[in-house]
Length: 459
Image (cartoon, rainbow, N blue to C red; front, side):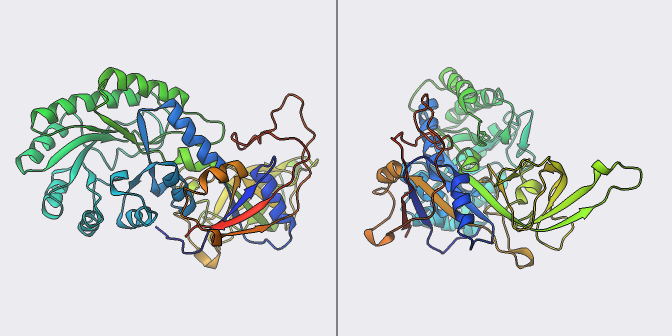
């Protein structure tokens, strides 16, 4: 995990705007050549509020591995979220922001001994396990741990299945592990599962919660005090998706299996908070025209577009997270879309972002926009071949900044004021409330609007 040492800037907006508007303003300044992200902090706040509304019993413990951008983690910490950490470095990041150890679960079932010792020193006592050898290791290095047995219950379809690596069988293995833990004097306090990242099946949560109910009874019978249920991740995060359907399944299963409010329920959402909050801008720096091959029509001619970010950078998500990315030209065009492919900047032929796509003709210097790029991109990106990883330009509505400024670790010295060119706002819609479509918490207000940029840096 990369820990970014640079101070991150937040640009506070007033009036209607969208991340694409911000990208256009930055590009129009004329000095931007490297790829960059625009992070809409309002999207994170809106999703946190949606979560609390739809699943009030379930505490979100953000999966830091999804996106360890310090501003993302700080914002969720300010809102009161907990954190799913998988390593010493992630625990360091979260605790450095003032998050107490009771808001952290060390949710890696196979942990290096040195990381267990660090967690113990930091006061992080809640951790997962799924094997007998892990129990013996914990007994040696952290016998006072509050343990959570991770079981396997896979969704029928998931973007990234996880059960092939983690989770013991809830029927054949988990009861035995609960008994072993009791014999060697370890305290198991709960059950966890992860149905798979980007799960496409909703009913799997009900099955897993039913398994957990049985194991709570088994644990209590073995002498453990069971009070924690961790329902993992798998929640959708792209624009236009919702957790409403899955929340109904989870809420009903919790009421059926765990009606007592003495059981604490947490979850490990990652892409739910991160994906839609980040929009990537990448520049076309070279083109190559490939003529139609023998036997093909002239319409099958193909253009290769080379952009300044690729699969070794932000688009590692194409290889490792199985994402389907979509490119949109920053500037509208009336020209007919043509067959093309989009390639990253490195000298590796594997560095292909989109092998078959359709875009209006693009020229060197044009910019492409990729939405929903916040999940499993930034933490995995590398400067392979010497190409820089994109910087993050964070933006936030003024009324949300007013709400959060006292919660972030900020002082007056972190603020400065500036202004950049403003794209003319669209004509007002008499039926509209004036809110930005990309930020559902944006306030309505009378025209004309202008953008006010207040820059602040996290400690």
